[in-house]
Amino acid sequence: MEAPSSRTGRGWAVAAAAVAGLTTAVYLAIIREQGNVEPGIFVWAGIMLVGTALALAAALVQDRRDVRWAALGAAVVLGPLGLISILSVGLGFLIAAGLALAAFFAIPPPERDGTPVG
Image (tube, rainbow, N blue to C red; front, top):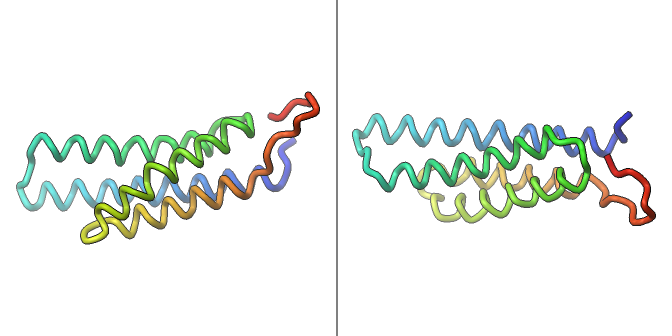
C-alpha cells in the first residue's frame, strides 16, 4: 500500500500533467487558428509534450525515486518554457511547473537503509 504522501504527490503530478496538456492543446489551437504553421512551431510543441510526458510519468511510475526525478524534470522543462512564453500561454506552463514542484516536495526521499522504496 502506498504512503499518503506518495498519493498526494501523484495527485499533484496528475494535476501538472493535465494543466500542461491543456495548455499545449490551447497553444496548438491558437497557432492553427492563426494559420501560422512553420517548422519551428513543432519544436516548441515537442518541448511542451516532453514536459507534459514527464509530469504524467511522475503520476504513473511506482518507484518514489523515479516519481521525484520525473516531477523535478517536468518542473525544469515547464518552468523556463512558461517564462519564455509568458505573453501567450506561459501562465499555464508556470502553473504546471509549480504543481510538478509540489509533487516533488510532497513525496519524501527514499530511505537509504536498503529497504524497498516503491
